[in-house]
Image (tube, rainbow, N blue to C red; front, top):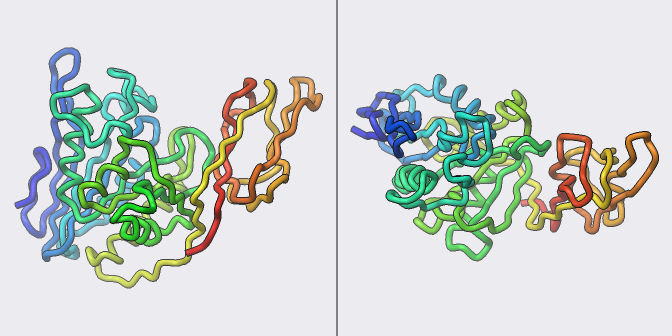
Length: 318
C-alpha cells in the first residue's frame, strides 16, 4: 500500500485524496489535491506536481489530461501527484502566496512549522524525496515563452547529468541549463538525491492547449523512457542555453517586436522598438549576444526600465 495524504493505493490501484498542509484563517484545513498511481509491477517512483505558482495553470491542464490515461495495470512503479501545490495563490489566480507574499518555488525544502509557504514546501518536498525522479510543472507565468525545460542544480552538481538526461527525455526541444535561485524544488531535490527538472510549458493567461499537449507528451516520454510504461523513446537533440539575458525598456511607450519566439538572433540584431502613443519612434534595443529569442512580455505598453524580453545565450545542441 502506498499513500500520499488521504490517497492510498495497493499495487494495481489508483486513488485520489487530499494532503493537509496547514489551516486557513477560519481554522479550516488547507488541503492539496493528490493522487497515487500504484503500478501492478515493481519499478521506480515518479513525483509530479503543478501550480507551484498560482497563476501557472498549464501544468494543471497536463495533470488533468494525464491521470485519466493512466491504467495501474499497465504501470511498473509508482507515480505520486500533487495537482495544485500553491493552494492559496491558486484560489485567487495569483503568482505568489497572498498569505505570506512568498513565491512557493523559493521556499524549498520548507519548514513544517514555518510560514504558510514553508509548510506547503515541506509537505510536498517530503513527497518528492520519496521519488527516484521528479517533474515540477511550470510555465512562464503570463508572459509569452517557448516551451522549455530548466535544469537548475548547476553544472557541477553530482546529479547534473541525470537532471540533464531527464530534461532531454521530456523533450520540449529547448533546455535552460543554468543554476537556479535558492529555494527552488529543482535545486533542493537534487541535493536530496532526486533528479528534478522544471518544464516551463509556454506562458499564457489561463491555459494554452499547445503547451499543455507538449507537457502531456513530455510526461509520457518520461514514463516510457524510465520503464513505468512499455514503449521505446529515443530522446531527440535539444537546443540548450546556459546563459539568459534579460532586456528592459529604455523608454516608456509601446513595444513592437522584430523577432519571434524561438527565432535565432545575432549580436547586434534589433529585438524591439519603442514608439509613442501616436506612433513616433523613441528607442530601439538590439541583442548583446547571439542566441534564441526565449521570452517576451505579453502586454504592449511598458514603462521605462520595465522588463520586455529575454534571449537564451551560449547555445549548443546535445
